[in-house]
Length: 224
Image 1 (tube, rainbow, N blue to C red):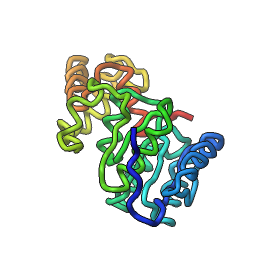
Image 2: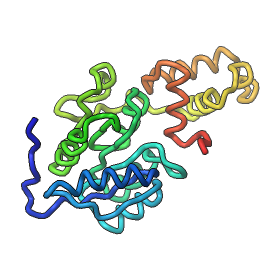
Image 3: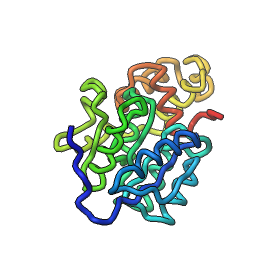
Image 4: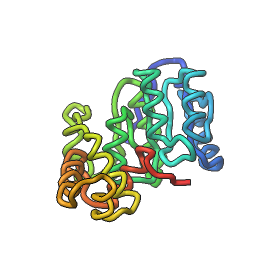
């Protein structure tokens, strides 16, 4: 497969964010071996990624999802709020729908799996630097159907959660049973179940495991 080189004579300036120093070093060696790329800053958590991005204004940010403190999703949102045109490549081990959906909605430009060939990351960086989007080639149609629109765009969420729906999901993810949630929120168990069903439909979640993953991405749970 031929990789399209950066047509700009200036190397692409890249910020690397990953909490594992060994991984960052490997990514840096990979990227800087390319004549059209250079790493201008590194970060070991989400807060540092935001700071380094604002300080260096890079062409592309390569962002891990699972980092201590501010995770990759929260960092992506913060960066996109400050720099709406920021190009962010998510690099993660997570291939499931909950992660992909939330990160696409947050505004990432590319989603690459850590287990994939190095060429996937290089292609993603070049694609987003020229205004495109990129999904790892190993991701199946099942994962992308329903929220990746035509022309590489991202479909709008099917609906925003109400405050009560969010409360119910948070408590489910925290391990509470329906009857306990009902007592805590002064609702009937039937109403709790209705809120859960509505929230899962809106977010396209298929079960409790995906609810927990969604809660982690939202920063609702303490994962330290």
